[in-house]
Length: 230
Ligand SMILES: [Zn+2]
Picture 1: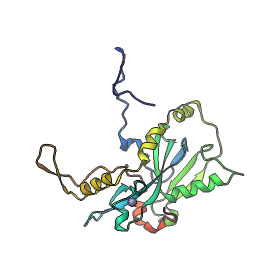
Picture 2: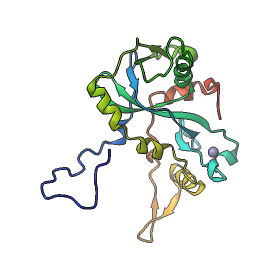
Picture 3: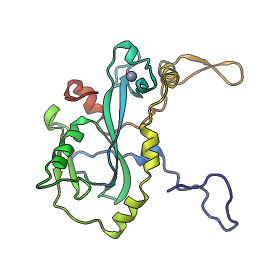
Picture 4: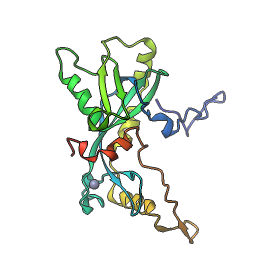
């Protein structure tokens, strides 16, 4: 599922890359209450730190870990990266393809159904209702309920066939240490040399490497809830 942005095109081509979806819109934000989805890809795992610059009263920003390249500036500070997963899903409210970014709080529950081969098994064979209870506290914030098995409709199957696995792969590919450092400098508002030779004060509000997911706040509020970290 690639949209050509360069190379040979035909004269009657009307595809000017207008299908480019804003990353923010591509990620599913879970609503309070029911969120029915159908997984259409395997989980894509990545490691991420939550970095808060000094004085940040908020939840900080996600910075992917570069340890697999040999070193990571944030691991060096003693921070432990956490595992998260991206999943391609069909969200049932609008019936569109979305990327769901989950922590272990959700992953672990889906895994239980996946391992329950006698009754559920492969979690792409049925819908899942991810129920968000914002007052549910650490253990009740997310509950994942399976919806009885049903085959994909033709439209579903089409969405599944077109799921951009390369995109998921790219999003979970760890950056190298230098890239992580640049991200940190940016978040810290470090003065970096501008292209015109002058210096540019980088805006503190940099775009996160991976879009924030609905459970960002949750993870920050209950940092010790990640039963399993890398
Ligand atoms: Zn790291």
